[in-house]
Amino acid sequence: MTIPAKNEIELPVLIEIESAGGELRPTPALFQKVAGYFPQLTDEDLKQTNRSGTNKWENRVHWARLELVHKDQIDRSTYGIWRITEDGRKRIAAEVGEVQEAKVTKESVHGKLQRQLEEIGRTLGKFARRELRDGAYTYDVIWKDAESLPRVTHVFEVQDKGNVVEALVRLKHAYDNWGARLFLIVTGERDRARVDKLLHPYLSGAFHEISPLTLVLNPVEVEELHSTLTRHKDVVARFLGR
Image 1 (spheres, rainbow, N blue to C red):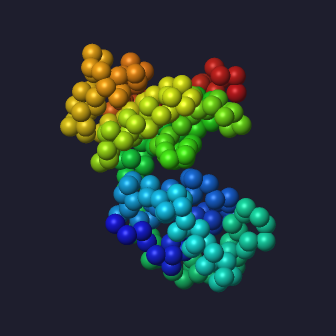
Image 2 (cartoon, helix red, strand yellow):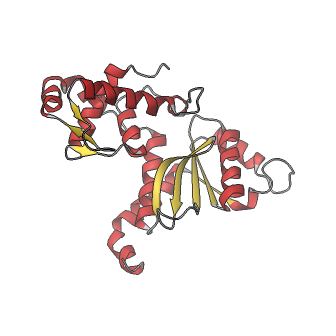
């Protein structure tokens, strides 16, 4: 679909800033949250790039932010901080009904699995984040031992209405680049059958090297792990010495 226009994005940006306490830094999580106001956007839409290689969606959000600066609804006096102004708060009060329906829209399967994997990583003491861009590749979820360390230890690709081969290409690149542990979450039976064939240990081909290194999971398994760790979050923290 066509990415929403700047004026359509402005109000969701203001709401997210206000929800964060009035100011925030533009992180990947912010772009994901703003995308949640537009349930018609697909994962492929959010991964489109311009000729320069920049992400189209993130670029459009930045342009919306600039328009809000010009309208005195965002203060840009502090570098790297997006801070809402009183005019911005007045706009939210006047127009919030327009986005209420989008805001309560059910979380997408892909987005939910990304969030759960990110939260699992943090519970286990990892630095975890969604949508990490590395050159030409964007990974759904990554874990590192610490934010400051360059090496990614775990890479997760969520396969839901996308391209199985592209997901495996990203995983192979992650293994070649970092020697990362690989995880592929598949939501559909047809895709699962295709993954099993592509990763068959007795076949030679592009993915035979990562076949024994890739753990394929389904959404139920991720949900159960997330639920269990969430219930025992405090105990896990004690085990990890945090």
